[in-house]
Image 1 (cartoon, one colour):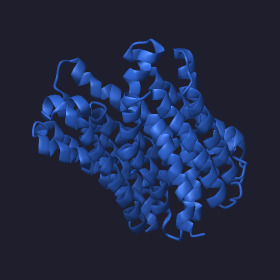
Image 2: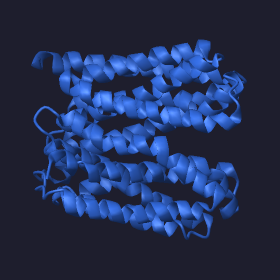
Image 3: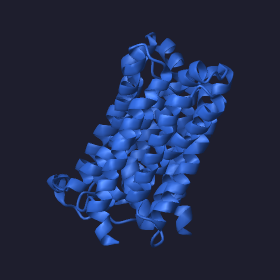
Length: 386
């Protein structure tokens, strides 16, 4: 079987994870009504998932570090499948929160193990493209899967959305069994050995860069709907179409981020991408009242959001010798932490009565800090190797 075909199950897995995480934003009012809680209280369905991402990565280090990588993937997808199927039948708020936490457990772990598997299956010098292929499932879920899941929820039932996602998990399991070869476990350095990676500055720099870069974009992207409607004056019925364009930007950014990172230094590609995001956010601050400019810059920012995904994921693995699983998982932990921080900081100008375009201002500052960190990382760790 061709190596490129072996990457398909990984992309299918990230597609399912992307649906599970992000479709909640579109169906939040439906689930809140069904559980008998307010929409702010239902926001905990998102928060509990994020907590699951963090705890799942720690559990991976405890229980999965000495297991064959294919077996680890099968366990993770099994948890994802069962959690989504049970969520479809949840009948109260606390059960729903618990199941969202369980559904989040395999998220960061799957991305971490999947990135290691993708790198091992890749042709020489194609590691970043292989990881980008895996991440493409997440971008496609934003492009097509999430709008479809939201449509099903609004027109039929949110339970059907989770049921279909859970059933999709069986297809992912089958594809992993059939298409991914046996891959031996990584050398077991012990539980403490995994955490020795943090004695080096390199992983900390990369984690900070992920938090700043993603946090910067999510300062603005968390409020994209009201910005497009109230500042860019786009009719509400066209916002769904704008989100599809944003998803297309993610797909394009992810593809070229992986391709360019195999050709040039991944830290330089990621750093320049964050600088482009910084510039785009500054332009959004000044020119988002123009609908065409606002939508164009939205696509640029969403492209940047995923252009850094593959290079940063692989950089964390390469700079986490002896703790590759933990290092790879840290990418998703940092991503989710950046999302949470960005959404909070981006909301501060709005709370003080400023316009939605002001969400881009702190975002630009965050993105520039991310660029500066990656530039420093390049000068200290990669420039001498070239």
